[in-house]
Image 1 (cartoon, rainbow, N blue to C red):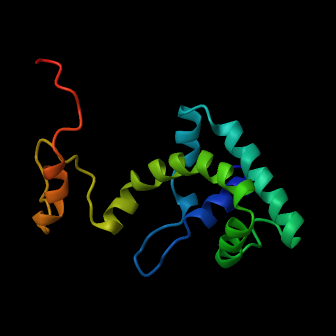
Image 2 (cartoon, rainbow, N blue to C red; image 1 turned 90 degrees about the horizontal axis):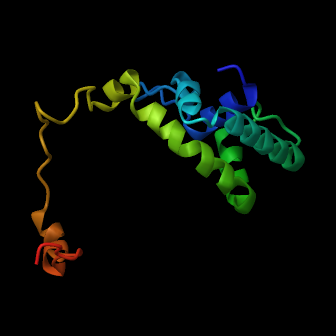
Length: 143
């Protein structure tokens, strides 16, 4: 990923976890997803805006920012930061959670759920009772 600000930002959005063998956000091919979605230039500009906010508030670059400082900036300047994270976040999550290394580390595998199927974890079926009791939430078009 050639843009330093964008790479630093996605590493802050998804920091790696060595205990779980999870890579950071910059490990995945976000640039491929961003280019497919025609969001590459926008993401670079938004990362630059984020870097300007950080520099203005903490006099640091994104690369120098710790995860704790990132969290604090996000909380303190939410109205400025939220649009940036909401624009980059969905593409980052798509790239991250479809990455084979991430899937292996999470134990979800790379195979689709159908046709071979996967085990569905058993849970408390009573949790679905309010949904069942609510009844239909759509209009029947055949009657």
